[in-house]
Length: 464
Image (cartoon, rainbow, N blue to C red; front, side):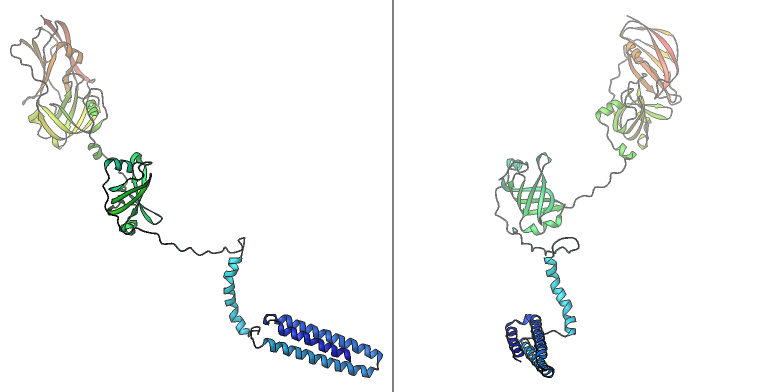
């Protein structure tokens, strides 16, 4: 009987310990109470069995029943004391099922960011999101400094030279392309040797200038070259121009070729025999006006020889040229040299000019005249003259070899229009060397002297 009492007394310390525990350890306290109660029951049953063996069976049953009732009373008292300790604070009370369900999502949301921040980087885990840092306000110049001395030529030279001129300060102006770097407007200036310099634009207009990004901007104000490759500009005035959009260049057309002026070197090839075939351009040529059939021809060099260069005149500007036949003209237009001996000119303007060579006076000269195609021999006095007149044909012209023209002394090859018949050409010679020589006349194509229709020879005996 004494043992169950001692077991009951032992339950009181457990209750005292439960009083001292914190409300958060309710589960552990209840477990300890249950264990203590189980130990008391096992001891009571063990002592009852021993007494049953020693004492009579009836007495043992009574004592075991009394011990069990006492143990139950002690366990109930201990549980009531634990409830009294925890119940007033109300922190460890289990919430109702509905409150649990309502609080569950809020608890997950509150715990989610902490879990994300604590979770290390790796596969299958979310990367922590760091909030953007707040931008610090940059200091901006709002007031302009007082006027300084203007920059001279030497200062400007150093200012625009990359790698030199640090420390140059003065009033001036710069032109360049506007860019924005770190939120501040910058002027990119092309300096000497095509190297770029960057200047930060300051002043009250600093907030407005970024709107003119990639514009051509001209600024004037206080310029300071703080480094060898840039500096600052306190802008007093500025002007911006929208960049021009580069249009695709159209393919060259015939009109553009007409507007291309030939250089002096190209003009010399155009008027030279056997050169410049295929050249085309705008130029002004000077020569004598002739006709072949119904077409007007401008003879620009080597007239009367098989190296003659001539051009057919056409276009609106070629009207009314008959009155200038046999005269010297300056013709402006588009020259197209199709062969080495001429081509065509689309005339835009015609102006009469005085003759390049003065005609030789024929007074006091004994001259021998030959009319038509005659293969004969003539006698001519030295330093006197002889003439040969031949009828022209459309598309063809009379000419002699250049060496023969020099040997016999060809002075003029005049085109003479006739009102009631075909035009004629007069060759005027003044021989300077005595002796006998043959002169061959060719009726050849106007623009292809190698193509000869017919020819004849004239023997000339020059007597002293």
